[in-house]
Length: 209
Image (cartoon, rainbow, N blue to C red; front, side):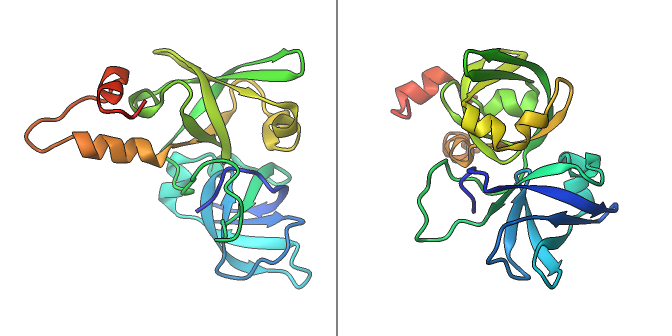
């Protein structure tokens, strides 16, 4: 489990179709630990003697639905260590299980803030609501606007500059994890005998918003 608060921008030092090695300044990491790499929960399978290069294996499924397979040597990635019970939950509950990926369609600066828009696909459209949580490349963000084709977030300079988003450009593919509570709400209302589509009106009627 993670919070969506990025701890480090790691650098890919080697990648194949099933293994990735990443250089990081994060410490207190052991073989077997879970690390979110661009929001993807991966298990540390090895590390160098100085503990600065971590190895991870990733499955064909991970390759198919995330942007891990698009990385190259020297690519930068968002890294977060797993949440501990004594840590503050500064973002929101993030599982590290990516639901879909999508592309950046616009990046604008408004004063000191950044307004970033992403393409909406069927998965995103089904679950995401305005002011709801979403994890984008592992970053805990709040949905500012959403339409049939686009959803947008506002980033403060701290988030933009201390994550890989300062390297992102229009057309880049990002990982998306939907807020897990949206899925629980769906399961609660989707009874076997009568499946209901989750809408803002339905959520309001049942006291969720």
